[in-house]
Image (cartoon, rainbow, N blue to C red):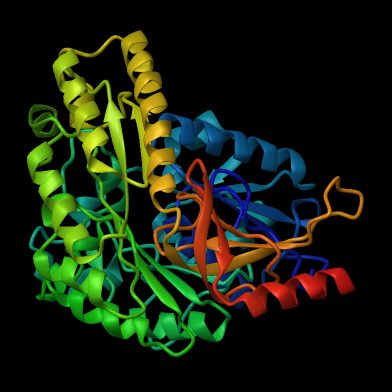
Length: 498
């Protein structure tokens, strides 16, 4: 699947003379699921997906997480207005939900819809096509739409528009690509109150999908060619708390992995403060569930973390990593960190550096802090000078680049299971004598964010799992040779024959 910040979805599928729609998806894997549900709903209403140049309407599923993502979304809306012959563009997703009428006023090219419109998206597109005016919604704190008590929420979920919670006895989803990997939404919303994050205010309170619904969609995905399921949410470690069982995830993971046709299951978006021993055990010992830990550290200094309304310190985080690696020495661990948070001192920044040097993480995303509308951090004193923020981001970025490379080098000689995503075909006029190569990901590599593993000279169908030994590393990417030498020989012979 192409990069998450680009137009990833929009394919011709039985284009008709009218009621055709182009769908653009920006942002994270959670938006991918939302778009596939929107596509299914639009298809049921008689809308057919097509390219922008043939569409009556273009729908842009926006991202509104940080300033750069907002700009990308606005740019995508403007580009869609130019590319769509009718000029009719609809904004959905997080940016649309977060700003509502304000976005509509600033961007008259687009009709702005909310999450509440998802259930009737076909009707809303009919309104747009017919030129019927739609009043943009007034943004509100969606955490107030459900009870504060998590266990009181399930009975009211049907009354609240929550993307990714279609419910019912059947799966309402349409695959928008044919790759062997797909995200599956585990839950929506978040009950945490991190001072830098606005997501809970527009995504709402935490709501788990019932296990039967998750398993039903997993079976549906397997029947549609998926071999790896990536479980996504805003905070996967909270799964089940609103269903009365905080350890429900430990029961669900083996069931998803046991679905016929699924080779592996990957869990993402984990809160370090909620990592219980039983979940670590499940992630490191369940067949079919990869030992992969997408841990949201955000910082390491205890004082910075308190200002972020988070918990932890270097000692606690290193202890957590030690417990994981004691059970699974080759476990994959990735994280994101924020530098330049209000009040961050040189000593606190150095504490973060020291932690990352000791942590041996596979991938680390470094982000410079910037104020976000409606967050508590925006009102904090002692803002760090933007030039200092940029310098710290660049400095840590250089260190992280080296650390990621070193961690990949440590994997040379290890045996990995590579799920092939694609075969790279070398063009006839390319200056190389090497044949096609398979490219995929080892257990510690999530799609789009963690690097890939190249299998030179191997040609197998996407979705195939190849056991291989790592022979080289370039940055976060690995190069591996299959243990089955017949596979390599037959692949090379096949490529030479063609």
